[in-house]
Amino acid sequence: MIPDNPASRYHDLLAEVLKANPSGPFRSAWAKTLGTDNDHDLVMTMAAVASLLPDIKSHVEALPSAIRGRYERNYLAWARPVIVFDVAGHGAWRPESIITGEALDALGMLGDLLSARQAEAPIERVAVERLLARVEDMISEVTAADDLDADSRAFMVQHLSRVADRLRNIRIYGRGGVEEALGRACLATVAVEDAAVQQGPTSRFARFVNSERYVAFRTLLQDAANIIGIAAGGFALTAGGTQAALPPAPPHSRSLALLMHLRVSSSAALLLAELDPPSWSPRTRVRC
Image (cartoon, rainbow, N blue to C red; front, side, top):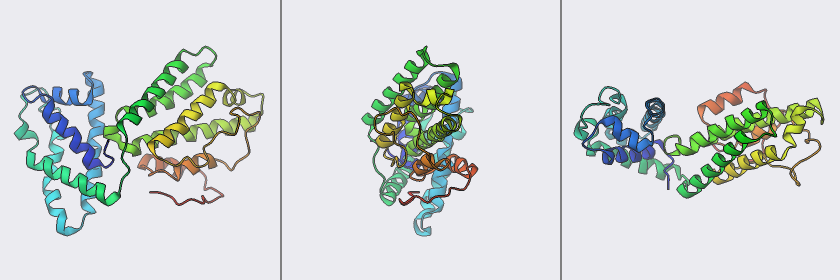
């Protein structure tokens, strides 16, 4: 199982770092844990790890005052493995100077507390790995496809690559990161499908959205939504797959129906804010 609150995810990462290379450089331990030896990729991934810290802090600040103190005292200790990454990265590995067992235990306790309070649904590691394999296979197929123009190929590869990155690093980004990537992809499909309706059945957009590759792309997004555990309301293909003309719908309604079911991340919320106010109201309860 992959935990889905920031404290538990960060705790598991730090526990792996402590086991990775206790007598070697600090950077090597992180590289082994995060699965990359490339300096650029490692720094970028560490930036994503660092994004867990403000999320953890916000959860700590929301705790009742009677139990908040212990976690507030340990926050600096939790931040140290990220703060000293470049400073101590190539130096000697000294676990006691980076993260203490006491601080790690407190982080694990906070993760358990958040998990119990949020009643989170577990993320099946095997399901994520299988889904990632499907997404990577489609990226390879689309990249090599000679029946797609460059724009169509780039459209699918861009969105599939973002989903693949979030799945590959779900231990860092959690369910919310995958949801955001899927939400962006769904917004993009709506824009393409709206263009197909507006420009007519003979337009390049209509040919694209009625192609087998686009149907497979859209189906994979829907399957990903179901596997990750989000409701895909309003994001379903019509019976029979391809269709001569897409059904009319209020602008952005299909993507909004999906995004309204997400535990929306800040960037996904910004995307929603950019859209025109919807002229409809979802029947289902918004899950935030």
